[in-house]
Length: 87
Figure 1 (cartoon, rainbow, N blue to C red):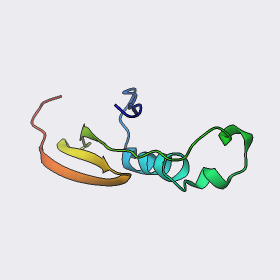
Figure 2 (cartoon, rainbow, N blue to C red):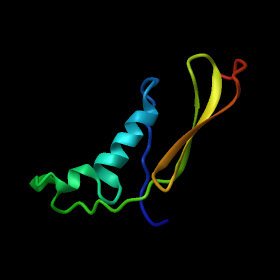
Figure 3 (cartoon, rainbow, N blue to C red):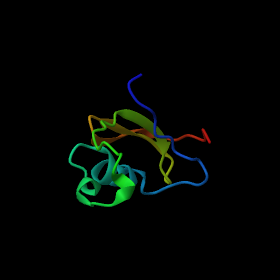
Figure 4 (cartoon, helix red, strand yellow):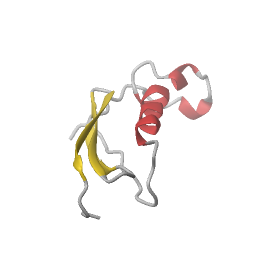
């Protein structure tokens, strides 16, 4: 394993997981991230050279199952099947 993991805290449902993950990647994680040019001391030891890859399986509010996939910092969503009382 070359890095660590991001983990969603299952406190409540989020309707903005894709937007929040994209924000983290664009502002803090990827090479050339926006915070890299911020000049704040908080980021002096941060490398801004991370690559996010992984999958989140989720259920939408309408019950449909879907995947949020991130490969090399690019995010995509895929609807799978309608949920049928799985939760």
